[in-house]
Length: 109
Image (cartoon, one colour):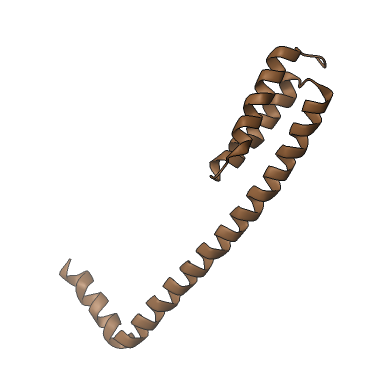
């Protein structure tokens, strides 16, 4: 252990503490920037997923039924959307489609 500490201190001496501090600050700044960018991408993806789920929801409600396979695909997309957080009305739409499937039978199978 003392050998590792000695090696670290030797490198710190060679590079210099201000340089190490600057490098640390640069890394933290990039992490924060990356985090903001990820948040923007997640938000955009969630909005796109909500749009797709909503369009499909209205299509199935208008046709009056949803097949098991279509419901499974919608549910998988909903679960991915749900994992991104803040869901609201999509929860009730999910319940409506499940109810529609159980009441409407399997018209396509």
